[in-house]
Image: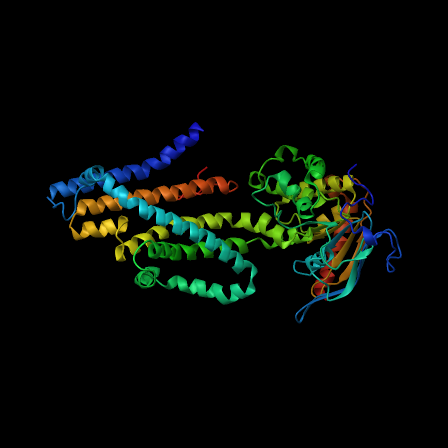
Amino acid sequence: MTSRPGAAPVADHASHGEAAPNVSNPQITLRVSNVRKVFGTLEAIKNISIDIADGEFVSLLGPSGCGKSTLLMMIAGLTQATSGEIVLAGSPVHGPRGDVGVVFQSPVLLPWRTVLDNVLFPIELLRLSRAEYRGRAMELLKMAKLEEFAGALPRQLSGGMRQRAAICRALIHNPSTLLMDEPFSALDAITRDDMAVELLRIWQANRKTVVFVTHSIREAAFLSDRVLVMGRRPATVIDEVRIELPRPRHIGMTEEEGFNRYVRHLRKSIEASHAS
Amino acid sequence: MRAKLQASLKNAAWPLVTTVLLLAAWEIAVRALHIRSIVLPGPIEVVQVMVQRYDLLFEHLWPSLYLTVLGFALSVVGGIFVAVLITYSEIVRKGFYPMIVVSQVIPKVSIAPLFIVWFGTGTMSSLLLAFLIAFFPMTINAAMGFQSVDEDIDKMARTYMGSRWQIFWKIRLPNALPYIFGGMKISITLAIIGVIVSEFVASQEGIGYLIKLAGGLLDTPLMLGAITILSIAGLLLYWLIAEAEKRAVYWQAPIDAAGGPNA
């Protein structure tokens, strides 16, 4: 209902029509090619290549401080890769371009703005019409079960509600891709499970390409179509697991053997990376 | 609303009771020990003097108040302006900010005689001293507020291609408001000190002048009366800022100075 294919209002339309030479598969939304990142003398990311299909939910799973957040920031255009290329929706990423939504570890809502005004904040920054997006904002809040709190200030919300508002904000401008940087790691375990279910529900309705950074094996397995396991510094993809559990997924699935087989496999991959 | 009023009355009750008890102790001590009025008059006598000579007191209060408010206002505007420079100009931040911080240790009142050499006795010196004293905490607080923006908020804004201008008006400025009001509360009391000190040194009017004059005449009750009216004026100014803060920084749960957040 809210997803308008190819109608991302802020997307870089100039390069949309022409076929980028290095995108062979038209279904690929995000292509990371041979990306390397060096901070001073420290090699944080070593030669990562990832293809992510349109509408795919991909998790980057790895220990804290393994460079997965850095990769996410490079996709968002906030950090430049030392070498290699990132191509999003057909055009290379050289800086922030407004066609991605980002959710951080903390909700980073502006405390002086109401929930609705926080959700509309990207619209203001992108110099789009607030009036035009107000309806969409309310729709998103309704989907996140926050419509009653549209006029509330962030401090009146619980941690889980704040993070749901942050997800609404990341979706408001109908971005092609949603980047999530350990979005639930600051929440308690019970809220965290709820949030995973909520996120899938919202994603099911919007069907964005999602890159989800996490250090929780179960979270990655439950949410994703595909999990990329990343090793410690310098970060590189050490394993790739396709999660072929049916959708829509429900929390009961995490009790089942099929799910646990994936969890065991992912855990082994991570342990192997530690041993090496 | 009624509960809120009751709570604030309850909060006010304690300091009110202790104040009344202290004043009573003072009055009783002065009477019981037969302390001469020239040394220490009782609070009742001070109030009597204030009522009798209110025209004299107000005549001298107004110029002091006027200069205090003006010096304070200038320090707020100047402090915020310099804080913006500190935030956005590397030259100012690296070259001048350390200087501003270090200059905090200079007792500003010691400059008062120098100002009189430069600007003569009178309002200009008082105004400048008030401004100078109030300016530093204002600047440092505002600069802290502008710069203490959460790193992820900054990243979030840049993701959506927020311009410097947008980030300043929509993020840095509101983020700095609580700091700015904190600075204003410090600055208003310092502006009063600046004015009074410069009136001590050289002036023909103002509460500072009156206090010095009464001291010279050994009119202790008048001195205490002048100090009292000055304190009341200072409290009122502080209260005005605190009220403005409550309205401007509406998103923060109010912090009760007497102890912790009041529910």
